[in-house]
Image (tube, rainbow, N blue to C red):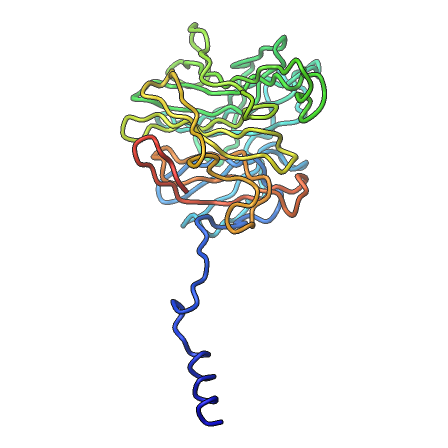
Length: 322
């Protein structure tokens, strides 16, 4: 009996490495409220995240001193949208710094309510309030409109990436684009003027589009340059289902051609990732140095509440891991 007692004590006090715990490579949810399509920027020592509107604010804001503890602010970064919009469905924002100014890109419904287009707004403060430009950056109505803008600076040249929202004019099924003929949902790259507010006269360039492995769409672009490799993060499949994911493509030039990563290197995040914790992860954004990522994942299996998660990124050549 004495030895049984000793053995019981020994098993109770075994060091943690004797019974290893599976480690997670992401952290979250760091924001438990609905905070979809998060975008990230670091200004000084503070991280700022911006998210799709919650029915109260057009653009939600959260801050963190350490990338772990986040506070959602009770303020709207974009109280008033541009004159081209009716103010409805303000989605998927991004913020970049251009000199002493900050530029916020956003998608919203056009004034006639027909589709989404993309606009810009500026502020001298990263938290805003931002003043919206009266004109759109991209508004391809005949192709389904445009959503998911993302700013990118490359050696002084400014760009905006966006998705042509082809599935909005699809033929039904999954995300309205699961029935043939499947409509293209390309990710486009538009060169911008030096202020970051107006597009140049150069035509936008297609970087990638949806293929058979992507389900009904590709969307939510985020572009970084790490040691000369351009890495385009994106989501594929439908946001409201279990197959939504985060993947990436790489190129040696900003305008491509881009090669989509494939298994086992992609998707980076999908339902069941992180020991089964994540459901429908997507809508990601990456810090400009390619070191950290923010994304949303569903609370349970319901896309009505998409919570923010964070993670660290490792890049080795053209291979990305989280």
